[in-house]
Length: 484
Image (cartoon, rainbow, N blue to C red):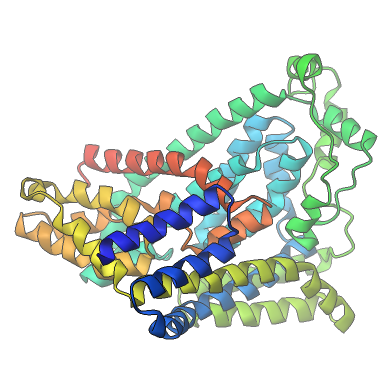
């Protein structure tokens, strides 16, 4: 009974948010509360919620101070060189912009934290998507999948959890999987190329000069990204790229500026930026201090010298104090990012109700046991494949902790009974991460959709099919290479 109710609760939540009948926060709170009462455990709802909030409070704190820290770093210009390099590659070509989104998200994901990846990627790319009227769900979908593949790094979380749960070395899990994960990342880039071509056909291609002229004609002013995603939202009146004959003309001229000389195109290259190069918050004299502070912060995070929330709390305090020594300026920076902080932290605490009820009522355990029990005996020798396939729905519908510490040991035990090694099961368990990163139980995804001003339901409808495909490509590559 709890198994059916668990799946029903999750299905109800997904249907309501995808049909936009409820906001994600309301659905995350009200639906589990209703089901908790329905299963006869309403008297324990408070305990379940407190347990859920307690478990996610460090995550919420980390996100709050990470948003402030990286928001300040964006304000002061730390990431401007990276952004300019990506934007020079992208120019005003929708195909290049989508591919650039995938590359930027993958590069920034090396720090192992999804939230910071999404903050930097959206801050850099959002203005371009808005100016050219590109689909924002393409941006969120591509960024989430690229980060999902990179999330398998040993310090990213899933691999470390699998190693801990099965008492094996994380290096023995990750290193042999590198070829399969490389194929998965290539699949994301190819998918970005295809989606970019689709956007190019829909919108046409402009030269940088044409995009800037249209922007000037519409009197759009792109303010600094110091206000986070809000700055992009303020450019709603951005120039619409040509359609019909004008789009054809833009495409004909191409992104190489064949109608203008190279010097003028280079000047446009500098002007067509997602971050305002003249914003008042820039601190060029403190560039190397901010770079070293960020490197030190990420190094301490990877080496686990202190809990991540504490690191970002200290980092945010240092960044604000050094870059903005005057109290009014510090207050202004905090206020500029308060919208993102409130939206994300609110979503995390709402998700705590969902996870608290799922776990407290025993629904998660019953769902996992049912799935394991349904595996036919004949599939025993193929438990690597089974684990890989199960990692898709299980890591989407439950937290990584629940899957890796609750379900994976059972799957590994079943595999060992049929001669399948524990390492093979562990490697197969991480293939579902491209889909997991868009799960409603992942706090970072709310940073992504919140900063991009995308409805979570729209993001889900778009990304699920492509994320499943990417995960299956990784699984197929793992089997083909003999890794799984």
